[in-house]
Every structure is written in C-alpha cells, then in structure tokens.
Length: 118
Image (cartoon, rainbow, N blue to C red):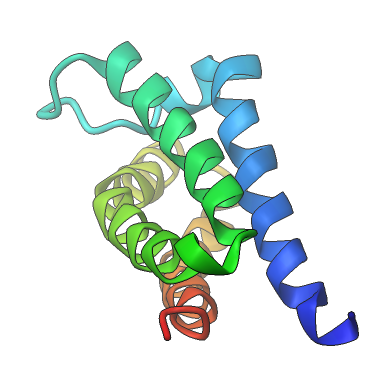
C-alpha cells in the first residue's frame, strides 16, 4: 500500500488540477499565450484531460498510457508556464521567481510520470 502512495498522490494532484480548470478558469486563461486560439476551449480541454488521465492512472491496464499522456500534457502546457513567467516579469510581480522554479519543475513532474510508463 505504501508503495502506491506516490501513485495515488499523482492521481490526486492531476484530478485536483483538472477540477481547478473549471473552478478557477480565469487563472488559466491569463497564462494561455495569445497565439493559441480558443482560450476557453483549451482551458477546459486541458482540465478534462487532467481529470481523465488522473483516473486512468489508477487501473494497471491504463496506467502506462496515462503516464505517457501526462508527459505529453506537461510538454503541451509548457508555453503557458513560459507565458506566466513573461507576464510576471512584465508586471514586476514579486512572485516572478516562483514562475522560474515552475518551469524546471515540469521536468520533475515528467520524471514522476515516467516511473509509471512501464
């Protein structure tokens, strides 16, 4: 059971993040780069993906696919994380540094998902 705790933690993380796309869409809409069309649809689609992938992590039969899809999603949302850094830099936001930490943290999240690709 304890060996599955990180897996459940990951599933919870993506489930909560996915739900948050619907609860607080404005936060995500602000960081979607302007060159990406249909901001609302992209926000909700990414939220749905996070929820589905979180659920897919739980059964062994879909775990590997879910992990690969999470890695792909993390790559897909990288432009939004970069845009958030740009936005915070332009506004001289006091938490700009957090956005700089967030970008390489994507690699940590990818490595975590990678553990479940086999």
